[in-house]
Image (cartoon, rainbow, N blue to C red):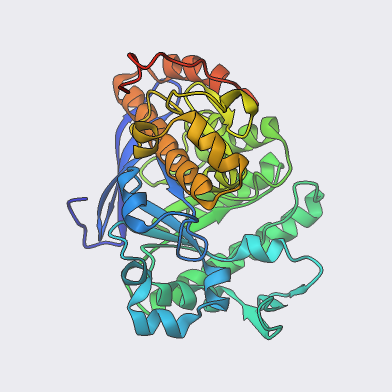
Length: 392
């Protein structure tokens, strides 16, 4: 990356496609990142099965790490002693840290939620822990991420309007506290607000209006991908992005599959994260531009073609589907590791193709080409003769 900025983060638009899809740049203290961008998830300051050089070689320039897990282990003292997450990981790119709000949401039977914050017990040693707007910001500052998230109240999509309003209003109060905590200890880190409101359009409008009055460097669309269904998610995503300022980045949290990314870039989203590339690799699934492939299927046992002939990753350059089938079918660790490299690369290539189409004004054409293929549940790519796939 090249270029820096004295402010925590600035965003510039390079092009907006007629569909609403946007191509731009995140200008940060560590350089410039093109958007739309997908952030691989490094929950525990590592991407499962990959080291930082391999992640960089996929084209990724920004990762997401998890504040909740990192505060429990290894803890703030380790990050302070070892110089922050970039030094620990030997990662030259950007890092965005979530606030821990979703993890608190996932512990409904073992946490107490009050105005002060969320009180819970560590699953490591059963110690009592408090995650508040202030402690979340302090932990993210110790981690040393480039972009921090406010602590929000994440709720199920089935929550009624009254419950959704209550969570939204608390999220707003916590957003104000998060900003105050960030500004009290200036560290040069950007901070994003999180629009809530569930599946209720009026609440989404109210949330965006409130947060846009505050000096955040960007905004996330929260409270989606929590069971509301794709149609409702797309509707609320499109509404939310339409309410946010064009000159600041828009981040859809926790989404998603390749077809989800196509859908939501089309709706004006700039940033994404999801565990699927590495999680699906652990289960033997590979994302390709011919569709989703389950490498453990016996049809691949004698297949000497690459996993995806259009993929630039070293896995597709060196290994056959037959070898990957052997590794994954036998549950060898190398198999999941190789698929992780491939899947993360696939996501980066997809984002690059979408960006170029936006710049060219042809995003709708690319969408219509890719969506039917990438949205299929599973497919079996046709084998290619060795003379065509670059193998001797």
